[in-house]
Length: 484
Image 1 (cartoon, helix red, strand yellow):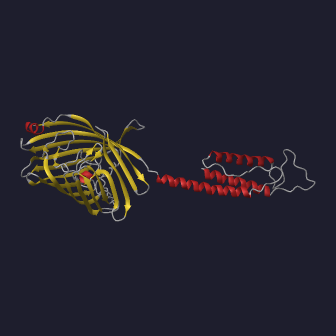
Image 2 (cartoon, one colour; image 1 turned 60 degrees about the horizontal axis):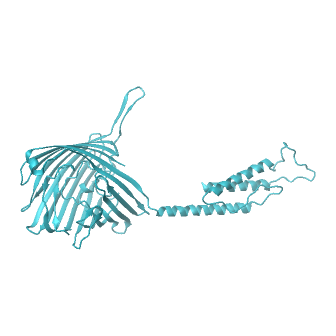
């Protein structure tokens, strides 16, 4: 705005100078025009001069109100001789250049200031349970429940061009810190370096954000969760591969994330993914995903434990190794996903081997196979930067219901998705009997909009352990989800 004021002031000053340079020379016998009489050609009238002076005064006032002040100049209307305005015009041009430099300086300072984006997500879950006597003996009473599963506040942004940060809090119970890291990008050879608290690079299911999962909960008992560490990783939205490898702690508190001990509690975790086929023309409506994961973990407190719920955060644990005394353990996983239009098939196999102090090496494993299909024709988009399905499903039409002008009803149905997953956990080894289960999940997801979803699930779980066999637990659960 300021630069246009300056340019306008320059134009007015030039116009005034031109007008006076063409001033009519009165002959000696010529008498000044009487009121109402037109002046000779080339001569401006007193009213015109007054109007030009008014424009100059107004522009000077606007410049005085601007943050750049006003240039050191004095432009006034002529009296009986025409002033030389060339000097004033030069001053205006100098001032215009100064204004542009000041604006460029302000823009450079603004670029150094971190940006901030505020978001969040809310999950509200409810569940009704049914169980036989064997299940009651194994896991206790599974009580019907309603819970605020997640209430997150999310902040993220950029520091200059190649540095990002993220700070997430969970407010659903005691306040806890989730993601809290700084990510340095555009580095030679490694691409990105991340420092802070975040998910270790392990498992396609874990690295898909929970707001994008087709199921309400992840299935594996071997997920590593968020830990403090430093990680090198790729960050290329056009590549057909990703990698991540980092050094992390294995025993820490999450409220806030902290580890204090003289004992070694370190872990090395890595993941590599590859897309042998990705349909560029359809933006990933057809693809094949392959991945491999590995983690070696030294136990600082000398203890490890694996356990699993039956696909519900409101259900009790149904398989559990209990505390295992050991020095270290390693675990690995293999990932597969296939997408063809509205259909997706996804599977993972994982195992863990613990070096126990009492029995030597003890091994446990798990796997799942899941499929989803959109009845309304949408598809689940793939995120090539993270090697996961962490992208938003966008319905072809949002849900709505309105009256039309002829008193009819017009509906938009949103997107509808069917989901099925079979999962099996085997936490039995030669000397440790944590139990094994077989679980079937049937789901229906209704996307009212890209940011709102309702989820309905039925889970059938059958468990065998040292207490009883064929412990059947059935779950009817639903979730209302919104993120922003």
